[in-house]
Length: 174
Image 1 (tube, rainbow, N blue to C red):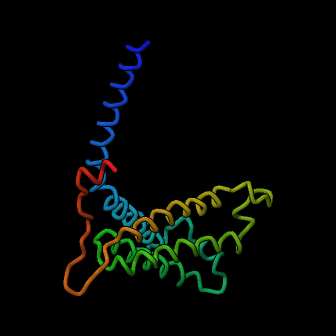
Image 2 (image 1 turned 180 degrees about the vertical axis):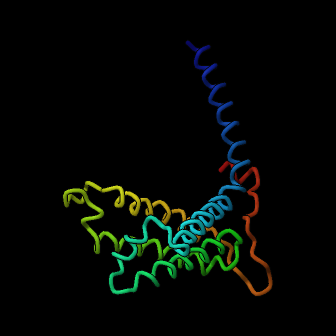
């Protein structure tokens, strides 16, 4: 039995070493990848709105019934393209990220303005396909908050420090 436990300890140590190596490899790329992929997603979705071919144009128009849908959808799309471009390039992140978080929070207005489109049979626990589409924005909000928390602070004397510096081995072990 002791031999089996010792063997298991070896597996645990090998697994721990592999895990630490994986963390060292992925940590420097994780946040920049998240930022760039989120930016690409917003540029894509925004471009569809600007081009007038977005599958959510009617939902956006219904959420903002006081605004002209022929103006609000392309303008919202242009804002999304700009926010996405800021994320991809890393320019003006300290401005773009909070605006993106606010925009994503605003998408939940759909649940107030179009509850019949969001909930099946009026049941708030039964989301429709559109409801799930909007609800996934909780994950995008979480990603945006993580980027806000880790975005470099700008100073007048230096350029943005993105990507973040690679942590030392000692820091990874903590």
